Image (cartoon, rainbow, N blue to C red; front, side, top):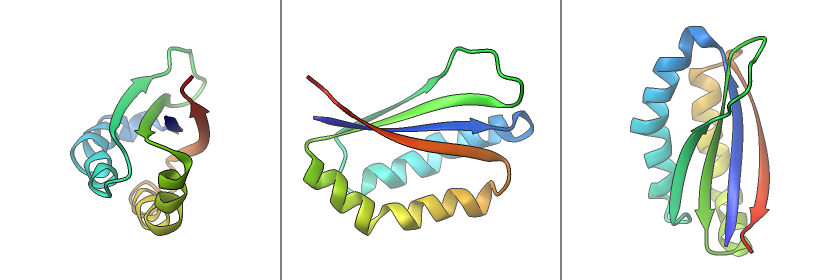
Length: 99
C-alpha cells in the first residue's frame, strides 16, 4: 500500500473556507477518481509563523494506481486548488510505503 501525502500550509484568513472546501469538494473529487482506497486530513501540530499546516493522506493499492492518478487526474485537480486559492497556500507531496 502507498500513501500519497500532500502537506499544505494555508493562510489563516482562508483556512476555514479551505477546510470546508477540501472536505466537501476536493477530497471527494480525488476519491471519485477510483485510484484511492481511503483518505484522512490531519492538522500538523506545530507553531507556525504564518498559516496553518495540514497533511492530507490518500491510500492507494500500489504505485501503478498512483502513477495513473498522477498522469490522468492530478493536473486537473491540482489546478482547481491553485485557481481557487492562488497565493494563499504552499504545498508539497511525499510518497510513503506502508510496511
